[in-house]
Length: 339
Image (cartoon, rainbow, N blue to C red; front, side):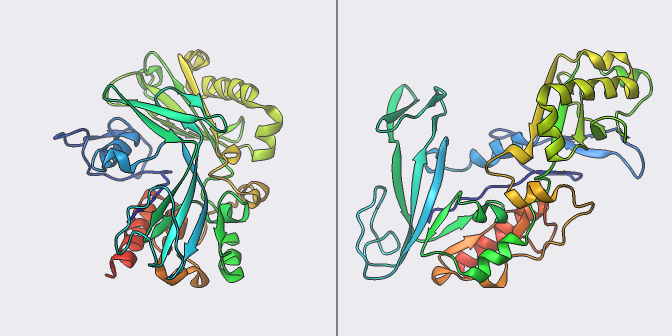
């Protein structure tokens, strides 16, 4: 069974228990913040959680630099000869199954963009593993975990097409944080703490509507802020101007040292192909957290239960947050296992 699960990580104000490398326990720490209390952060950032999970998955089951372009349902009696077919009762042949068409986009190790008609070589352990530019995988079940509104964008196609009721249901589910952006400024030292400042703040003057201390346990300290400009304003101003205005705003809030960060990281989720749908961008900020109610009724048990959905927007609980992504993933797997 091939299961593809993409976990959306937005806000985390909780203790997460996981592994940080083989045999190592994850550590967490508190960062100063205004009442009602300090925030819990994971040492090494949320990427350490991704690394811990991936370390428990056989590496040949993970395809990086790849994009699933279509999923088709093959009912009993249809014979196929797809790449990756391992046979077996659940593997294909004349048993109902799904087929994923995959396009290789980059070579992770070498950072090379794939060109049409060529093979991609991934060097591991001193050997070369050839991966075709296009390939297909046959599976008993598939779980799709991308934002619901992207189903309307043609990012992923289905054969047969999904029912109209399901597509209408997907359209009504907004992608949490899709219209937003975020900036992180890294400094030599935490100068704001020396002044007795927490790093947390709110403002209506400047591009940053909310700021927090994002410093790790070890390493360079940092401040991050969510951008209060809507997607159209960010696009009009451009990345460089937004960052320049943000640094000036941080200097007004925490001191002139904020004007000279060692590094600045900027992300605009509204410009991310696999995050924001057209309606997410056009609707802008909703002014509140969406009321997520799980998978639309018309999208449940599609293709004889072989097509499932996960991702935080599909969760009945904690939709939009990390907890919601975990709940949705667990529910999707339990449906496959019949529990």
